[in-house]
Length: 108
Image 1 (cartoon, rainbow, N blue to C red):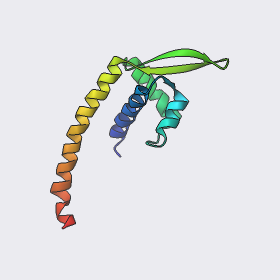
Image 2: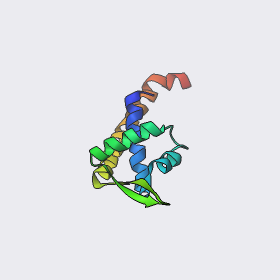
Image 3: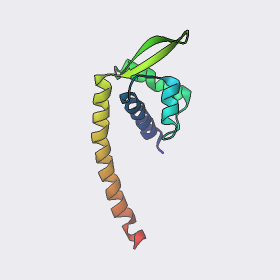
């Protein structure tokens, strides 16, 4: 998969996961593991970029005597998801065209 495309999809996956509720890095990585491969370092880079862009907010919360960084999605993050969905629908139409134009004869 194209690196830029994968990066964009991973970023949106993180936002979508946070739509389920506030979470922390390890939990996000674990929950997404059944859908996408996402290393811990990549996840934290994504979260940092999203926090800087105002798409997520982070807060330190004490959990079992330790501080845990909890992330939640913001309105900007939700707007990014909506934007991605609209763009993905266009990509879907392009893929449909490619399938018909380039591979239709292969199936006959």
